[in-house]
Amino acid sequence: MNGVNIGTNFQNEVRELPFSLRMCGHFLFLGFAILIIQSKAFQNFTGHKLLGMVPRNSAEVKTLRDLLEDPEVDFWMEPTHELQNVTVHVAPESHRKLEGKLRNMGLHYHTITDNLEEWIEREREENYPGSHLEGRDAGFAFDVYHPLDEIVNYLEDVSRKHPNLTKLLNMGDTYEGNVIYLLKISSGGNDTRPAVWVDAGIHSREWIAPATALYMINHLLTGYGTDRYLTDLIDHNDFYILPLVNPDGYLHTWGWNRLWRKNRAIANGFPGVLICRGIDPNRNFDIFFGGPSTSSTPCSSIYKGDKPFSEAESSAIRDGVMSLRHRMRAYFTLHSFSQLWMTPHGYTTLKSPDFNEHMDLLRMAVSAVESIHGQKYKYGPSAETLYATSGSASDWVYDIAGVRYSFSVELRDRGAFGFLLPRTEILPTSEETWAGISTIVSRLQTKDEDAKKRTSTTSTTPVPRA
Ligand SMILES: [Zn+2]
Image (cartoon, rainbow, N blue to C red):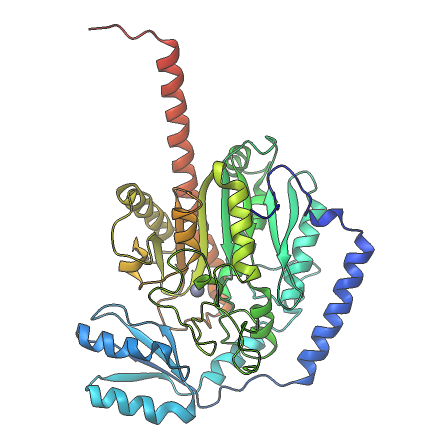
């Protein structure tokens, strides 16, 4: 691949950079970012509507899906199958056109909110930068959404506080010069232990995903040496957590457009199209590139880019996974929303060779999830459960990197607030998601240990011949 090796050779380890240089760069960039943020207002969503509807047959699903390419229609829940909920965000200038289309189809719809701005302002009041310190002396709270600089500070802090347990790795620089960080948590083993990978935030408006990944980092680090189950888990697995795949997009959701999904790159070959920035990194993997549910138009929210791995975000996952593929026990990628646990494939409804085992694991995972706060999640292969996706991370990890257990999770909720999930739901979502992930990892660990025992038994015990 391209020389990034995060298993044995820490050439890209962040700690190797002179501290003063790094901090200097950060302050410069932060200053610059603050200037940008302060020099413009937030994009206003007054009068933007969220409409809910349920297509009654496959023809209606198809008509709705034809709107996927329309940049004026922002699907929060895509049309997938008949009788499945669909949620659409639409700006005031496009209401009439969309509502006319729906009426012509004879499709009933209801208004979930006629002013998304109220929801966004409520969220902003709950999560202003620095709000994690409110009522606390210090520390980092896991029941609040954090802006990019607080997340970066947190990762640097934990890697300093736990030098024997963590390594903070730089997986590449983004279009806007932000670093894509990967935190390795390992108690030893010299890179021989199975690896568990969790990434989050490839879609920037899905704030609950990075919040959940940060919770997991804290849960593992504070549990090591104090909690028997977590200590055992860390002594048998190296955890690689990439809590924010798309920092550029995330910065944009905090500073300008809360509902931004893609990264912030300007598409190759479209230099004049400044108004339509961004490539969807989760359509940019080299697996069925350009297939269903992707777009070749830079203005589309599912624009795939002009070639596979053109983006820093998809490349960061590729490089990390490729260097760990031979010891990767399981891969998880976190999204929101819909409450689903999914296996490959996204680009075809043909069953994968591991279908039955994946279903058994997911059944266990969702029941562990439900046992925590009673929330129900559906599970199944991606293309059947959600909708067709091409060029996505979890398919690429399974098909090309050859990681047998590759899962994609859509976190809370099921549409009540969607991407604007209230902060009171952060901890419950994090706790239940961790229950699902740890259940799968433990199950796979037991399976490997049983297999090892069997091999050693057969090699040392003579088997009588019949
Ligand atoms: Zn997503």
